[in-house]
Length: 190
Image 1 (cartoon, rainbow, N blue to C red):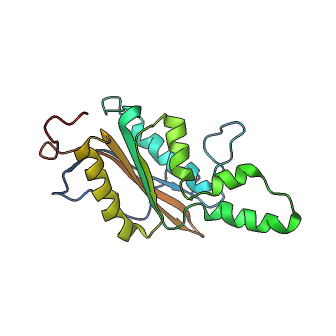
Image 2: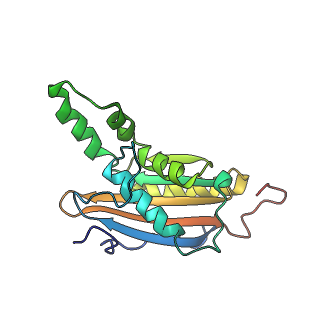
Image 3: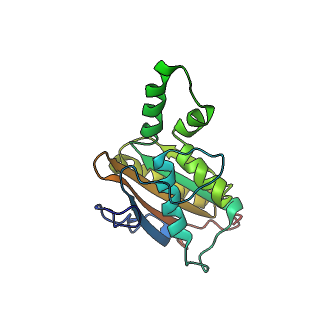
């Protein structure tokens, strides 16, 4: 396996018909186990899952200048069972030594992958991390996205699903969705 853009073994993230959502762009990224982050940000620690999610969102936006990118109203949702377990395990291993980095604690939070995406891309819409199995969490994520779009809380929503296999690495599938014309309430701010 390579460090970058090898297709994930799972299927692409598909938004079912009839949800009131329109897929505007999609991306899928695989990061091999122990792959170095593809992007470096000085003085910043992020969990390998966070780097994989950021890479997938970078791919989502890459080469799509026509897609709407309104940072103030773009929301983010991540569904992941594994989350930042690499960082949590690293903290646990460091406890006996008595020296712990505060940066690692910041990178261990369940919302850290979404926080990194929002920080790098300047997204200021609502955000949510669902720490559950993607098969269970994706319907809730799409329902939340639909609600945010229908109420005007967001103009677009990035929905990402992160899966991890300790032997093969991190897989991230993501989409940016907008409201289908029938979903848009009249007079709602966009």
